[in-house]
Image 1: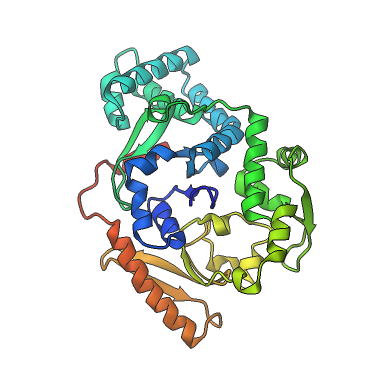
Image 2: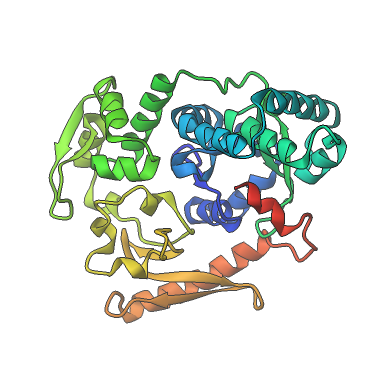
Length: 355
């Protein structure tokens, strides 16, 4: 599922679980996200547009390698602004790595408690942790076991995922990432790809030029620019029956990549609907209600009642469809309760500052 969708957006705690629910055949599929077997096959990294995504290991390496340069730059700028020498940061990274190899995954406060000294201030440990995470030396592990709580810890990537190479060639990684994007979400324009990946037009064009696949240019009324997709996918689409192209009713997660994958061609799923009805003020995709690929409303989780509430856009649904939406919302409410925990939080909210 994570492979087919090109990752689960994970910047907000509910998103991976809700994304899995939208694509799984049963609610139990989403609960497997917390299983050790699943966590050994996926990794959560900061990558596209500097946001967290949970990806299968091979795709995670590509996403990490293609986007490392600007994330590493930001981390190094913070070190410079703190007037800390890189030698001190490197020494702190070594100390963090040694600590985690001995004790296993730890929360960042626990790391600070053990490593901060009069000669190694808190800021040095925090910035070292940040840089080590961005470089792939360390990995993020959420050990909460539910979707509404976070127990954020860090582990040594080489220990958590033995054999995983987090130092891929940047060009190769970019080529693999862009190929995966157009394979899953083509036809799409260059601006769509730039929006989704955070990469430059030059980098994307170079990756497309070096791709082994044959490209098809697609023109559509909902795109002001030519779109591109692989010929193989185009032929698969042409060979499919009309009924196979119907996606039915879906409740998509916050920042679901099915919508986040596009920018210039958003009207493919918005139609005449104003963007503000599907996106917030900072451009994040709201949790949406979709009917056959078209946005017809939004939904939200109401924690006090542990239920899903929804709001449908005027003129975008029939009486029959509204009834189906209500039934789906009730089913989704039950599925979300399966992964909900009422136990106290493991850690304080300030751990989110690392994002």
